[in-house]
Length: 157
Image (cartoon, rainbow, N blue to C red; front, side, top):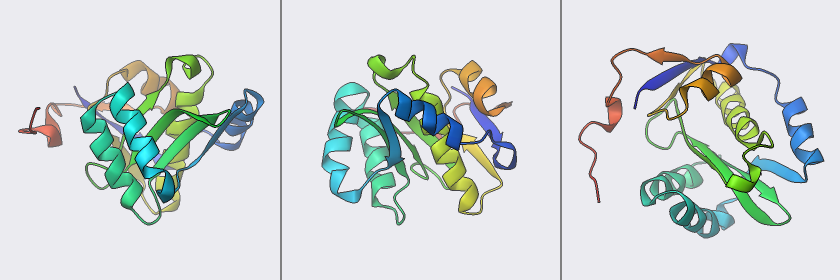
């Protein structure tokens, strides 16, 4: 899977996307350290142990670099940055029940806007799955010859 590059200084506005999520009853916010066990367990069960490990790292940063989407007190999505490498976005995952509601877009933008406010000009989206999603939402471009990139030689369980 290839990596992509995003210009953080040309991001779409975050506020209107968050308002749409609120209209759906979904709160997108920075995770709290006290939620670490709940978030990492949910990620491991619904996605993978590897992503759970990356969430642990993001939840250990100050400030926390993991964002969550919550519907009626239940986790329905997450997104992280600064988990694998500095300047990297990901992983991101959304429950099937929230995938058609713009929740992935909201989580992506929340993380990328956070990176911008922390002083980054660009972000790398590592090991991209849905290239078209990132092209459409944030104008990301493919980084040629970036496979396997930083994931070269990663341990597989």
